[in-house]
Image (cartoon, rainbow, N blue to C red; front, top):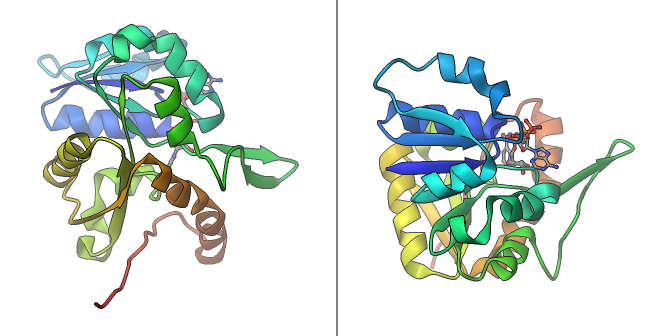
Length: 217
Ligand SMILES: NC(=O)c1ccc[n+]([C@@H]2O[C@H](COP(=O)([O-])OP(=O)(O)OC[C@H]3O[C@@H](n4cnc5c(N)ncnc54)[C@H](OP(=O)(O)O)[C@@H]3O)[C@@H](O)[C@H]2O)c1
């Protein structure tokens, strides 16, 4: 599949590398694509890895990932362009976090969230929020923790798009349990989990953890 990334930092490179190794045709979008030459050099001939502008990455992808800082996501997606994104599934992994004076906070919360802001700004795009509750290593290798017995969440207005993304995450990376929380407003919950995640990180001393929901009817 042709996959485009808006954002080419830790998450873009980790997911992109993993997808290329699985045989996908990945273009990482960056403000300065030449910075990614070292990343590109690790792939051999025949492996379909490329870099370009945000717009080129969005045009390339049948499926798009938003892997930019949440506070910059709307601007970055506008640079990618409505035309290049129209009708496509956008997997939004971004967190709208501010880090000022050593204090972590969300730039949008409670009655709104980044996923909703993106969906409102791009009504012609199928925004699916997921993967945002785990670190990039676990995103692509959930089986490395507790034999994969932990939960991922998914939010979005388009049921078919969510179902496709759940299938991709299970097939590509081995995710076992993905809980559909509902429409894109349910991403408020997973974005606000950052308040807990950041404290869990501090308490356990590393980012290699996830959430497990235990329930009984
Ligand atoms: N890292 C994780 O494990 C993890 C886990 C869950 C969720 N997330 C979320 O996923 C997103 C990406 O995380 P990351 O760790 O990959 O971040 P990162 O390493 O800082 O990379 C961010 C990317 O966005 C670009 N960028 C930065 N500021 C920008 C701006 N003002 N306008 C346009 N593009 C900008 C950067 O481009 P340049 O190279 O040009 O600066 C870079 O390609 C974030 O929203 C983060 O909260 C990350």
